Image 1 (cartoon, rainbow, N blue to C red):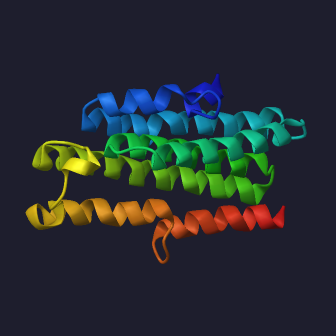
Image 2: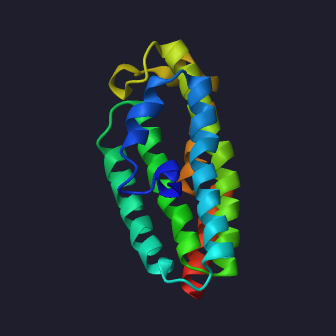
Image 3: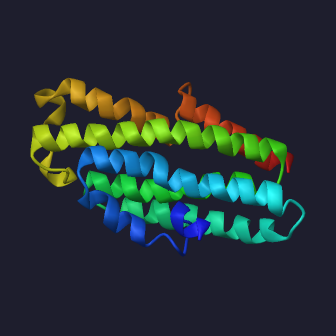
Length: 186
């Protein structure tokens, strides 16, 4: 049940269809917190109840598939809310990867990733609400000229988007660096 809450593939089909339909503030809370509660429950269960159990292999494959399905789904979208919903699924895969590593470093990287992702994802969904209010739509094909029409809103979206992508020197880079370091040490 934790994997359903966290939206781990193949139990993630509900997320991309449900988040874009809610108003921006509600979606920001949902995207920021609800899936992370599922990931946190996986962290606690895996580290406290099954630390020596063979679930790491299953979690590793689930994390890889979640990453791939999430990013492939995001690339195919033309609506900002749907793109963000699919990237959320992909990032859940990264978080589960840290748990699957079964190390202290992997768990620490996952916890940092969770906290960081709550802030960035909520910010992006809230800014998408501003974009929808200003541009009248969240369709990428209908939002041309947003930078000149609302430069502050464009920057408010751009900086967290770079952070979500893990671009150095932003804090999103540190989150991915910690996870990759944990994977390399494994």
